Amino acid sequence: MRLTVLLRRASGASRFEMSWLAAVSVASVTLIGLLGVAFVAGLSLGERAAGFRQATPSDLATLSAEQKAELDRLRARVQERIDSLAARMGQVNAHVIRLDALGKRLVEMADINSQEFDFDTAPAIGGPETEGLPAEATDLGALFDDLESRLSRRATQFGVLEQVIMQRELRAQIMPEGRPVQRGFLSSAYGMRTDPFTGRNAFHWGIDFAGNLGDPVVAVGAGVVTYVGRRVGYGFVVDVSHGDGFVTRYAHNSAVTVKLGETVTRGQQLALMGSTGRSTGPHVHFEVLRNGRPVNPLSYLGG
Image (cartoon, rainbow, N blue to C red; front, side, top):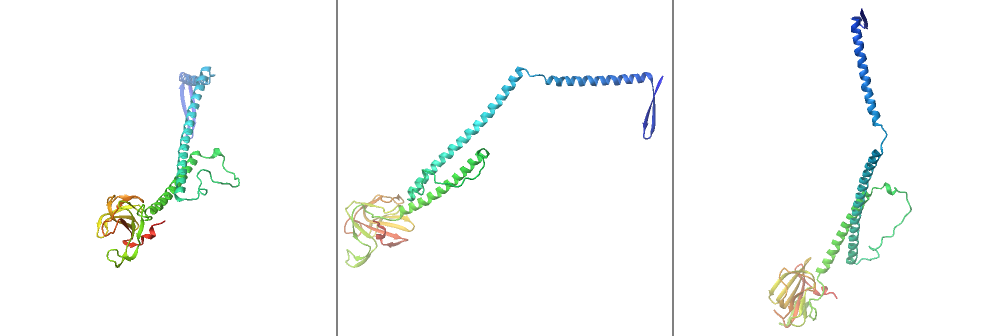
């Protein structure tokens, strides 16, 4: 017996003939293939079903341990963040303390009203209540950054103010002011006088302070020693430059106690009173020069 198969196509019908034995063989192979596919599908479904088996107490314990370990790691990270913020807060607080100390020192240096610049208490502030962001909505890191930035700017401003005050203090220190002797009396003034050696009128370019031989001669302002030695008529001389065109001169000394180029402060001993040069007795001849020209020292004696 033969089996005839007709296949219809667009170009026409096709006809295949096969024996009955061949047809049975094809059908058998097809059935075996379908059974194999069904077997594989069953195995896959069985494995999936095994995956959804009921958890045992051992499985639950393992899962709980894993969750606890994860919580511990999260808690450690949170604590690390808190410690970091606490350290930054400590640094900011130390910065504020240093700024308060600097502010107090500046107030004292500038002789400013302490009530107007009180660094011990917070300034009085106020205003109507306004709606703002909740605390949890703010970024603590950003707040710290802003605070540190403002403190840094404040420190810079304080530093500039300190420099200005120090320059003012330095100017006050170097400005000639005071007497060149610790004790003694004014024996000759600045201006026209009768020359003690010739008896004729002559201009006296300084003032004289009489005292005892060996009395200290002191600087009337901070400066640098620019001359040490003898000058005709002056005897042993010490010149001190104070900057801004000011020079003070101390003459007729018996000995000099400073060196050329030495920096001196107001009230520091420069020499010992003597009577060297053109002198009638122990005294110090004191001159003040401004831009190389003598000026009246009386203006710089102060009280």
